[in-house]
View (cartoon, rainbow, N blue to C red):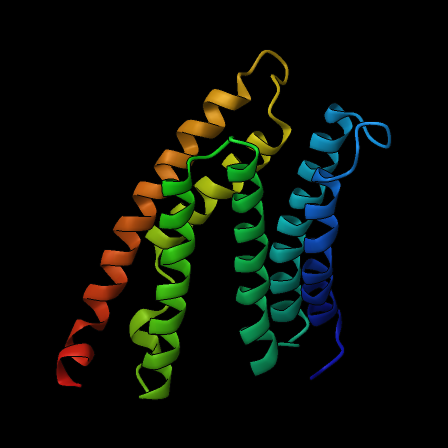
Length: 188
């Protein structure tokens, strides 16, 4: 593995996961609910920013690697799954929505891995529908982590609506990727 800045940022995201989850389980005497929610939201946003930044730097500095291309989406999926599980635990997201999103991530990751193993990885490359799904969930999750109005904006309602949109886009994008892979699935 190359120890370059993009890969270090990816590893930092993975290390942030237990910190992110741990914040929610601190006793109220150590951290008030307001600061707990704010801290978890801040850690998640920092992870999201490093996700964008490590990809940008890898391309700009020509430091892309096979290991980085593997680890980056794993780090993203682990952080989103951790956030969704915490949000379900604290009754801020329904379990069905979390299962749809996490299940799709596992299924499509497996599909991409299989397609790559038969030399057809480009057939299930990231599409715009997947990017829209990611955008919706990456905005919804911080709103639902903070779980309070901000500047008069009802972030609970907005986060909940965006999470429903993300779940719908999750199903649509899964259908899109399965359709793209269907000729190879049938051939096998």
